[in-house]
Length: 439
Image (cartoon, rainbow, N blue to C red; front, side):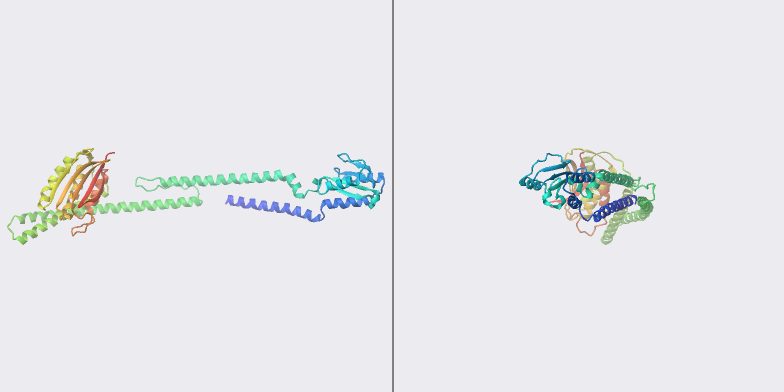
């Protein structure tokens, strides 16, 4: 507001001052309707007409005009061209003037400097003529005089006002910029939960209102974060309790199914019992994956990395699954090659859970392909482990497709161990590739 008021005041002062000066000059010029040089010309003709053709009277005319115009030069030429007298002429005059000299003189003075007026003495040609010469600078317009007298001060005053205005504007906007930069840095600060931190409000102006709004936003974010943490804690506890409560009857079901399987049963009953046992195992896997997913998403799944020899781990782990795949008619292949880094720093339990989920995914969704293969290969920039099958892949439609919790667990574990993964097709084979970067 101060800057705006100063700007408005400057404009008003400039306008009023200019109007006063312009009005004064206009009034002065209005009072002098006849230009000054015309007045001089008329006065000289009148004075020459009132002067008798005697040397004393002409000399008296010279004296009167020199008092009013000290810069004036005057001389008298007789009818026959003889120089009779002169006054304050700064150059040498001819003593005898011919007609051509007079014409040449008049021509050289027309519209030039000095301003020259010729008049007949007593208004008669036979008495000769008197000439007065005045510097044309005496007839300059008032604007030139004002500028000559006050121009430097006027320009200096305007320059000072502009500089003061610029300095005040700079100080004002520098303060605004400083506060905005402080607010920007405050917005970039984060607390341990990743949320912005409140700032101190020092002034109750527009920027202070913005800082209040920012603090209100931070408070709302903190409240929302706290509610989210409370809800997450309730959800984890609920899932953990449900997992425990569901596993107890599942364990009893599997135990009873195992007991019943020892008796000799009809084919239909034996098959139904086998289906029931498979469903119970599947539910148990889902509950286990759900609990693991909850712990991973809340960063409470214990991670203990150690040096793990990858090819050896894969041989031992596929051996656990060998009987299961063989029972379901799968062809099992091990294509283990040399790696750039044969030993990875990973968590063995995470690796087992991750490959259990991948192999379970193959067993559930790639039964038609009847192939599961484990590959390792040293590639440019990374080592790769590949799980290969001939199924439809992740985008395929099957009756056994679930919510994808198992692959979500794989994704979080891969990222948690500093690895990457991707899936793609190679001819008829669907491949899930886990990469270990060399750097």
